[in-house]
Amino acid sequence: MSETNPANRPQGPEKGSLPYLQARNRTRRMNLLLILAFTVINVALIFTDANSYFLFSALLPYWLFGFGYLQGVTVLMVAGGAILLVYLVIFLLWDKHPVFPIAALVLFVLDCGFLVWLCLGEPISHYIVDIVFHVAMLYYLINGVTTAFALRKKQKEEAALERVNQGPEL
Image (tube, rainbow, N blue to C red; front, side):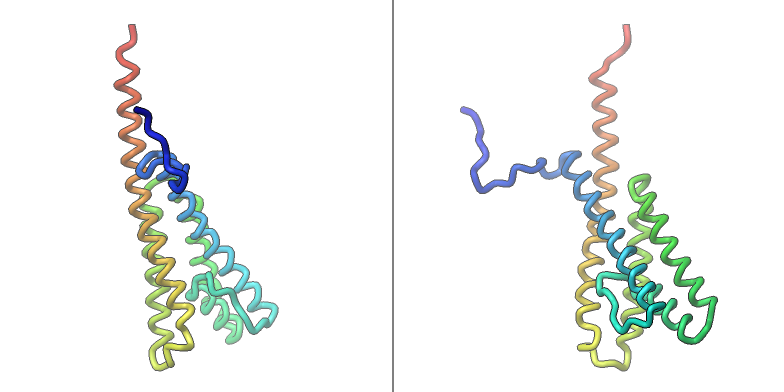
């Protein structure tokens, strides 16, 4: 008896397979790129004196640039730029080792800590959308760490299986 997929079952890669883990890892990596891109756009908006910003971004570098620009403190702007550069390096090296998704998570946890600090003494309603975004991104980054480790493990398993299947050379 042959197995058929029901019509309502998705036709994507099987959960836990190498293509499935690679797709999830790619999605988590792209989330980090979106954060970086929107943060860079927000920084550019600071220099144009715009009164708005994109929510899907990191707050700490944005505030460092903003405060540094408004107060004329170059060191703060350099610190904001350094954080953005670290995000870029993490994005570029994401697939190399699971330590890079961990670094992205740690950096974003620091950003969440900054958000908590901003909320102190303010009505939480002013930051509710930022909080929801940060919680969602924390979920994706935590999931990105677990996916990176699962992908690395799966790649090692498949490489070992490939060596076994090749057998000794004659």
